[in-house]
Image (cartoon, rainbow, N blue to C red; front, top):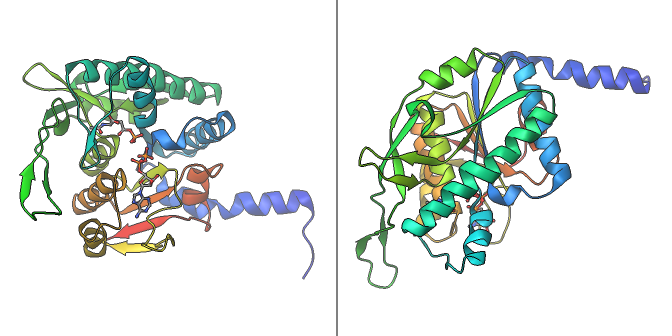
Length: 296
Ligand SMILES: Nc1ncnc2c1ncn2[C@@H]1O[C@H](COP(=O)(O)OP(=O)(O)O)[C@@H](O)[C@H]1O
Ligand SMILES: CC(=O)N[C@@H](CCC(=O)OP(=O)(O)O)C(=O)O
């Protein structure tokens, strides 16, 4: 076999991306950028370049971000204790104000700035902008492992998306702008709700019938009880992992939202390690996608 010169090799790599670019052209890809995947400047820059490259390739990327650890740090500074139930933050009035400040304020604008620095036009939004998302108080139940009795959680101002209007997102899809959305939304009751970013991303992807929904987190994907990566999971296998306690903490809403998104018609949902540089490009434009693929 003849060895390729360096330029020939680079050209071959670029050419290999063509069928992937064609597959996703004009299709919506929702990328959920988790708080645990953020924090490293080089990785943040690589993430922004990936999103910029998607837009340049004719894809319609929509970024939904989290920021759980960053909210936790700010609450700590303010002397407010973080409390979670069923993987969701118990959110009183003081907490929701800080959640909105951290998510829709600092984190949202940091991501916008990074994408702009990569040469594209990002616009920072939350559910409140353009009447995009309305929320209702979350009605979450958990089964108490000791008594096996189902219990309704009162999580305060934690919401679930109840109405999604795509007017603004459709406008942006036709423009140069890349939406970067914080998971905060108003209720019809006038309150502001804190929505788990996985739930928010799943709802946006589902209602947009996105081609792909990627969850960027800080682990290689869903791990089994031995800590080994599960490469593919059906919806029913994923449900079992929650019931038998293999998936805990933040992985619970993530898996639940993967299932929801697939049932809503998203063609492929992947949980992958956002701490790998250019994880988004590797997943979408090469054969080297890693992580856990959830299928119907
Ligand atoms: N079975 C599992 N496989 C992988 N991660 C798991 C599992 N169960 C619990 N986790 C935890 O879920 C975390 C990812 O969820 P989360 O903390 O909400 O991250 P993010 O901020 O990216 O949304 C991992 O860091 C890990 O600690
Ligand atoms: C209700 C609820 O739990 N909201 C989350 C919102 C941020 C989030 O989901 O951030 P990650 O994606 O980084 O976990 C929170 O307050 O932490």
